[in-house]
Each structure stands twice: as structure tokens, then as C-alpha cells.
Length: 327
Image 1 (cartoon, one colour):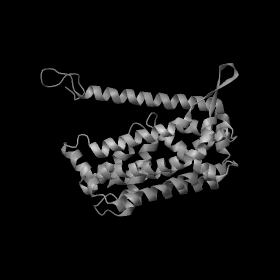
Image 2 (cartoon, helix red, strand yellow):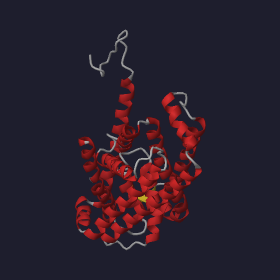
Image 3 (tube, one colour):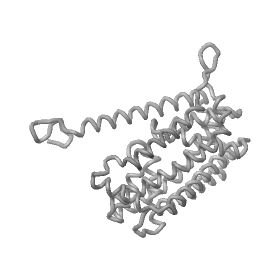
Image 4 (tube, helix red, strand yellow):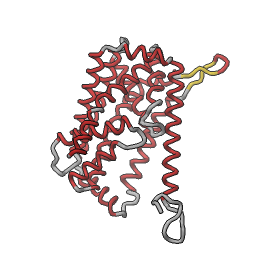
């Protein structure tokens, strides 16, 4: 009898893994539905051929510059991750594992987690599962902290644009989306999560999780501050990449607006209700850049160009993965 059978060894009871597997499958279907629906609406409004035409017309030099900026951001992220691993691995190895994780996150979104692969290979190198888990969590956590700080700083400047975001409604009317409330709700949810996770330490009596929490006690304040500062650098490089791509598309939008819009867009896309932010990211580009007069086809092309530049850079992770498999 296979492990996935409906019955188990003792008394023919149902296998306890089925409800969890079903829940994960339904969540995945829901995320695909959200991404698919939003992408359909965005592309119907922008026009698929219009978007393809805009992307094909991008200046190759600007596109390659955005790819280089992605590599730079990945390298800085590797430095941040290394702050929380005490095993003395060389920085080159962290960069390799980060590229590997980027590849799986980009090309198998929602199916195989890039962080899971990073953690697995770090564990193989160090033999410390709890350290691998804690370091990846802290790396991601501080990245999100920096993103929320930037989004909070951009929020007062972006509020007039968020208040004007609307969609066409029946009868020639417009429906305002109420995005002005979205960021405060995300900030509140993140603060509640942080309080529950770090203060209450749920399931901390389980040995692996107790070791996992134990690493947070040894992370120094200096490492955490440096991690946040490096995260600001990562976000700045991402903003620079989007701005570079906009110039390649011939857009005439001032740089300060990108420091307002991109952190907000990235925060919206980070909410785990879609597949790696797909659909939410494109809709956010259309709505926010549309508030300053950018056509939907151009805003959608910018969003896809950003994704494509990161995807091209992430392909190097496949090479690193094949090297690891051969090794």
C-alpha cells in the first residue's frame, strides 16, 4: 500500500496527511485563480499585441542594464544572508545558492519554493537545519521590514495617487478601489505577526523549532541593523532597474515617482494571495502609473519587462543547480 493511500496501518484510519495536502492544493488553485483573473483583466485592457509590441521595442542596452542591476541586488542579498550564518561559508557560495533559489522561485512559482532549495543546500553544507531555517527567515524578514519602511515613507506622497485609483463601472461611472487603506492594513498585519512570532514563539517546545528560535537570541543588534541597511540597498537597486527599463521603453516619468510607486507595488505583490505576485504586480503598475497618465499598454509592458529581466538573470541559477547536481 502506498504512502498516499486513504488508509493507514493501524485500524484502517485515514492518513493524516490528506487534509493538509488538500488544503495546499486548494490554496494553490486559489492563488492561480487570482493571478490568472488579474492578468486577464490587465491584458484585456492593455491589449496583448500592444504590450508585446512595446516590449519588443525596448532598447536592449537598458534591458541588459536592468539584468545587471538584478545581479547586483542578488549579490547584496547574499551579503545580508551571510550575516546570519555562523558556519564561515565563502560569500561566493551564498551568491550561488541565492541564484539557485531565484531560478526556482521564478520558473516554478507556487510549486517549488526557492527558499526551500536554498535551505536544503545550506543544510547539506553546514549540517545545521535550524540555522539554515533561521537564517533564511531572518534574511526574508529584514528584507520585508526595509520594504515596509520605504513603503511607509512613500505612502504620504503616494496617497493622492492612491485616492484617485479607480476602475470603469457600469453606466459610465467609476469605482474607487480604496487602495489608501491597503498599506496601513498590511503594516498592522505585519506588526501582529511579528509580535506573535517573536514574543509568543508558538510551538517553541518542539525541538527543531526551539533550536530555530534559539538562533534569534544570538543574532546581534549590529547584524540586524546591517541587514536592514543592506535591504535598503536591494530595494534601491530594484527601483533603479524599473526606472532603467522605463527609459528603455521611452517613458517620461520622473525618478522620484519610482521611489513612491515601486515600494508600494512590491508591497502589494508580496501579499500571499497570488502566485509570486503575478497579476497583482501588473495591475498595480497599470493603476498607479495610470494615475500619472501612462497608458495601460506601456505600464503593463514595464511590469513584464521587469519580470523578464529578473527571469533572464535567474537562468544562471539553472547552471548553478546543474553544477551542484553533478557535484
